[in-house]
Length: 59
Image 1 (cartoon, rainbow, N blue to C red):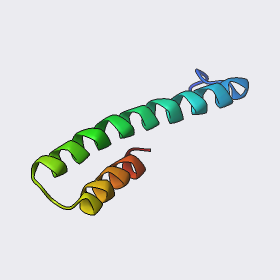
Image 2 (image 1 turned 180 degrees about the horizontal axis):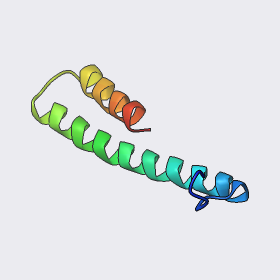
Image 3 (image 1 turned 180 degrees about the vertical axis):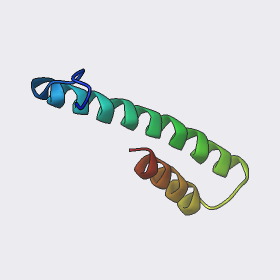
């Protein structure tokens, strides 16, 4: 916005796109983390905690 490249009327579209891409990347990385935790044979609760934490951090 400071450089003039982003206008206020485009803000909703930009924020929604960023949330979508962040969510998609978070889910993808969480699936990889869940798979690795499952392969290492930790409990499913720990594997799910890793997946949810990764999604929360990425978003």
